[in-house]
Length: 236
Image 1: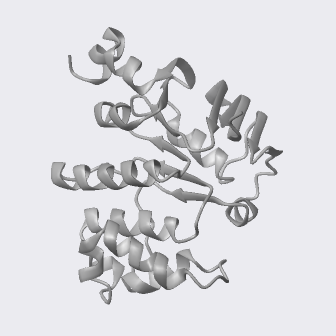
Image 2: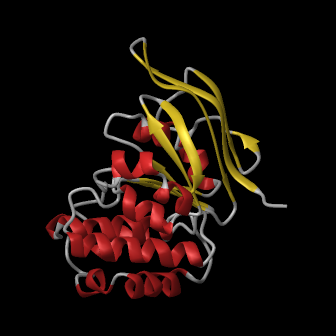
């Protein structure tokens, strides 16, 4: 039986009396790559921030690793949750190496150097810039670094918020290729992404969010073939 890493039950999130998320249900099993797609303002990022403990829900429950989440982000990180936020959030005045070391700051095992080398294999471009300040990297390189830094914590759940926003098509391909690789290696991932076509192509399952509600769910393959999804999100 598959283990549920994350489950949302009737989650409601409000901003100043306006319900941004309206009682949604969602789950992610161990080893799954799940996408949450939808237009801008649908409530996707709000949902992700709530899961990560950055927003307090009005009502509903969030379960992580089978336990009810208390919403404290630092404790969720210690338990194995890692968020790559929209906008990347790298430490701009630290070098690439120092950013990766920060990702591993809770670890005390002997594989940190080995894992850092693995990050450089995923993203050769940041290896070339290992001693540069993160703030001097391009947007695509900063996104690579943000993902690598999150992976350095050896998370059991990786949350990715719009990882390809504003990137060139070449960078989008590189980022999605690495996401596909780490998913194939067993990482559990919840991906929020506006690029529905590519997201669905690599997802085990996906949820469609509109105006704060989950309106459709299914396998990535099935949703990718659905005429409603093709018309609304895939330009067909």
